[in-house]
Image (cartoon, rainbow, N blue to C red; front, side, top):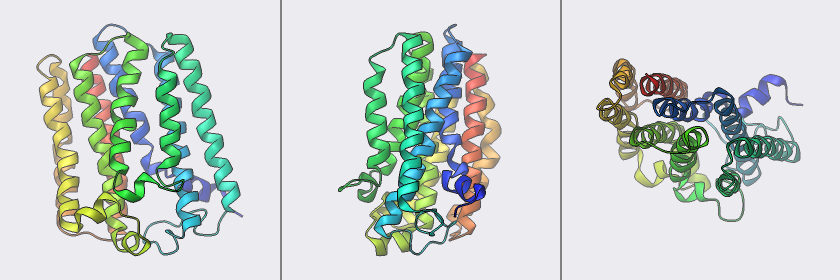
Length: 289
């Protein structure tokens, strides 16, 4: 029977900054437009966190029943590791996605942005379709596309829109930047799993690119966001706060390019999550100021 620690590991806490950071940036952009709302920001954060945990449980279930997780270099999964039955993990995925849907309904109701219900519905379908269904897009190298769209553009811009009912180009720049860092989280995870994913037929972008090019792609994904924040400084000078992250980015790039493998990349995964959180906080504050 799975313990609380097992469920927290299954929720993949290291990935949760990918949910919160877009909301921080989107709220900062709304503040820059003079329209920030703390209650709506909290609702947006709740939606994003629920969807992130939901997709993590869905991924655990789908990879587990497919046998993709039978051999892992990372932490054991709930389903693949035999810690919880597939049916229980599947229910956990549906429950958390349902919580996200409910919070999203409240958010669009209080903001009057009813058309965003369609975006939310697509996001939930995409959360399940990443590794679930008959043709999971995560197995075809499109995982980063989904992450960029839903945990970059949609999460950031949706947060700004539900508060300000308009968008600014710094909001767009921040959305692209945080989306790229979220993609870097997925990329480094998949670099670690290239050997086992290849054997299981899971053709992630890392598998398709090959080890060296995937590592270079990771470095680009954590570097370009800093360039975008410098561009934001043209209208929001405090966006330069993100340059405090340059040493952190340089360290991660050095580790990944040096050929770190297996469990060594788990630390990089954790620190990439912290990088995204730092980026969200610093750029969000910079845009607000």
